[in-house]
Image (cartoon, rainbow, N blue to C red):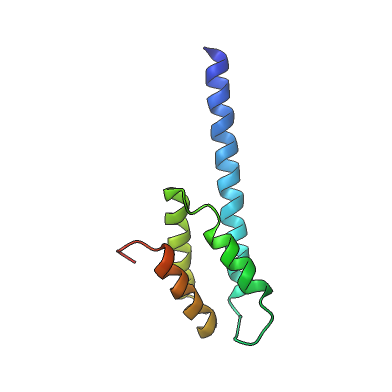
Length: 97
């Protein structure tokens, strides 16, 4: 019985750590993407898009990313970056967003 509890505890710790790291990566990617303007190299746009859409099959991850995009759209990011974020929100967002 102890080994089952230890296993589930290990899974919980690993999941929490991975989720926290993923959220940090998404935040960093959006921060870099915030100044994006059309015609600039696509590296920050591509990295942000990949990070935002990675793992959205999980409802919890999808909801977090939706909230991140909503916050991003209300931030001081460049208008062109916000327009792209709105398109992404249209793909992964819920009916309320």
